[in-house]
Image 1: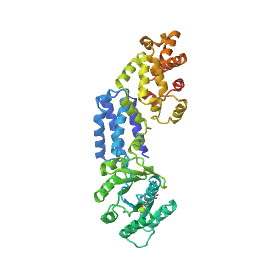
Image 2: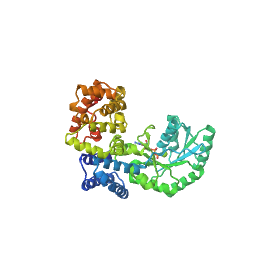
Image 3: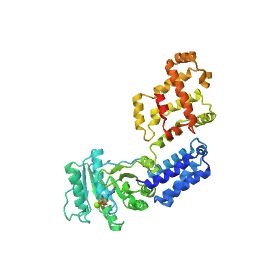
Image 4: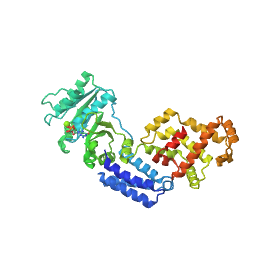
Length: 452
Ligand SMILES: Nc1nc2c(ncn2[C@@H]2O[C@H](COP(=O)(O)OP(=O)(O)O)[C@@H](O)[C@H]2O)c(=O)[nH]1
Ligand SMILES: [Mg+2]
């Protein structure tokens, strides 16, 4: 899903992230790439312009350019804007009405309405624990009603019995009273589509809307049609009280233009994605997760976000400068430990990194976390200033004093000194010496073992 777009973004970001510092020209270059990627994804020029005009001033902000990881900051800004274009937050189906709650599905012919009606019915039964009835109002296409009946039978969802020759308005009334009688809490109405928007179809949908007064009117739109899907949604919105979109065939959509354009063009949230022909190929649309997917990163964005909030950038910079000169002291180690603690300990950091669930469970078992950090903090605080600056002078009698002062033992002091040595060596190796290094390369196994 959206793989073309993902590949493009990955390329652009990896060159931005590689740069140790960014200037206006590099940011411009990156934005040019993003502009092209969005246009190729079938996003309209208007929207692309708007997108770039929102990202640009933020990306060129002095605090970004001067920060320790400008590439990550730019990624974060792009990510936030994508989320905002996708619709900010997940919008659930509203079932706030007297049951049976009517929900109408509309859309062009072949967009996937009938399939989606059964997917949504199954979803509401499973997740909202509602008894659902489905009714087909498609009296024009031969076997359209039969298609829905069959889907109901195969998936154990109630359908309104078919009466040949009955008109949509009458089917609506009959469905509502049948649902009432059978104790169904939700009725999904699968309407007839046309190959394109026409006056007759819109009129019929308006008439149905008046009769059933739906709690939700959902447009089923084909993701593969890109911008067109968003324009169709806009037209429907101008005619009926459209409340949401379900994008189908997202499984085959490499570009993602429909998803990106929908909210901006039609001002209606996407609520679900159809990701295959089977009834279970259906998922809730979470803008943040989709943005992660589009940008091709695990939850690394949350890590960057947390890092930029929690870490004292000034402090990091100072440490970095010192590292470059090979002056990493116990004092710096202490401040690193404190920053780790701020970010929720090692476990807190680990939980953001993609693909580290195995290491995380190892850590859970070994119980590495806050406690160790707190203990190390106590040990370092029991050292004299001299000792902190030059740990090499810590001999046997000094170790004894420090152990006493921190309520630990000599073995703990030795362990910490060893950790410190490894940490300073590792820091020297890492070009940046901050969390980003760890995020990219992972915690080296030597250090991991030492931390235990
Ligand atoms: N790959 C894929 N196919 C879908 C999806 N949703 C529907 N389809 C297929 O699209 C075709 C038309 O679907 P249908 O529900 O009959 O469309 P309708 O005319 O709007 O009622 C069928 O072959 C479905 O299996 C989806 O999310 N992914
Ligand atoms: Mg149909």
